[in-house]
Image 1 (cartoon, rainbow, N blue to C red):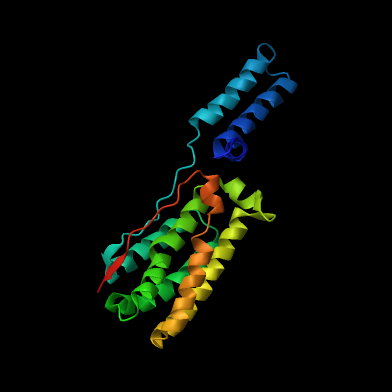
Image 2 (image 1 turned 45 degrees about the horizontal axis):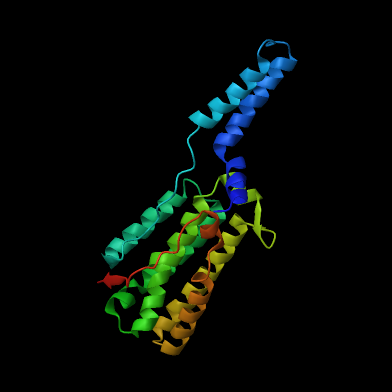
Amino acid sequence: MRTRDRILLFLYSTPNIVGSLLGLAGLLLFFLGVIQDFWLFIVVGLYLIGVLVTPKQTAYDLSIQTQVSTDEIRAQLDALVRKLQKRAPAEVITKVESIKTSIVSILPILAASNLGDRNVFTIRQTVFEYLPTALENYLSLPPAFANLHPVRDGKTARQLLNEQLDILDREMKEIVVDMSANDTQKLLAHGRFLEQKFNQADFLGDLLGKKPVMAGTPTIRS
């Protein structure tokens, strides 16, 4: 992670915001005449207290186990949505719910593996890697940074995540139709498109200093 990125993430972090507010409160006490001697040390001390006692941003783990049954995947997707309800914006939860609905509807077909291995593998990657990774990287950022700071093409991490989710939502809905029709050519096209979009360098992963994860072949049991 670049030094500039480390500094930005710290400036937007909750500990720095809390520390800054306490420091400003100390300055206000000074200007009101409540404190005089050692005011500078008091202000700095208040800031440091805020930084040290405020819990740091924790990394989110939204991974889904790969060697599991269809019922277990449904349960894990439900758990993923519950975790999002504590942190994610409403529009993100709505999109993930829609993606989950599409995934659940084709789990029996994936378990049967009646389609080509390549098609099935790429679609499974959406369930096991693309969706959880995009969400994890967003939620691992300080909320103020994710919602306010432009990170690419003038867009915030929140806007870019919504774009990623829109792509997944649209593709999964089309995949449901194409799977029902057993249209392997269209499924192959969906697979290539998703790989191109999500296997490229991840701007949020790079920002967080995360190394790309090479997933093994996921297996869905009926």
